[in-house]
Length: 265
Image (cartoon, rainbow, N blue to C red; front, side, top):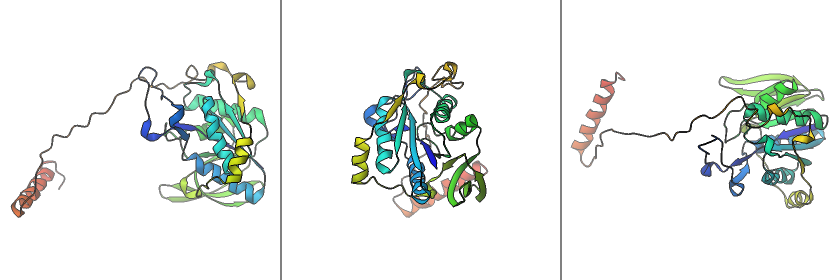
């Protein structure tokens, strides 16, 4: 079984900055990490490989510095890494990103299963995984919390919903997006780190696959960030300092009055 795991390099969430001109993120190489939710996809793939055998290819699209993210996945136990890196891919929204990734997957090698994280912490849309499945015209199951059975041709799994769990039977090839509940990501071993350091990451540009130029990057993105604003938090409430029992009674009366004026009680 050949498993493909698309992963993403994202900015450290504590250091995110936006370019006010383009509406895109300023991605500093020193502040970039693997998307935390992709770790669960990598772990799921490794467990399936350990149980049923096969090969895992991790795929990413981004700047050349993203090879470090792929090396991290190799250190955990994946077999090979492929990086799509070209100026033509820059500024891609979720539609253009899923197009580029799906084209690379389709044109590279035969695949049986694609596993992605629930979403990326920078865009927070959860659209790329299902988008890849749409471009490839394969079944997709989102928010997968458990893989209960695999008979060699289809998975029986439980996906998380607002009401509980939904059990599905999904045939191969398919795409799964997984949630945190599915597994606890492992730490890379010393042997894995050494193997990852010795491994080569295959870097492919836009000429490596038959991409349609009009579907790539910022130019090929149908959605744009047209305006960025910093929200202003305004609190004009009354501050009551409680030092005595009388202050406490007054505060309680004021709170009740506040709720009554707004028909909340």
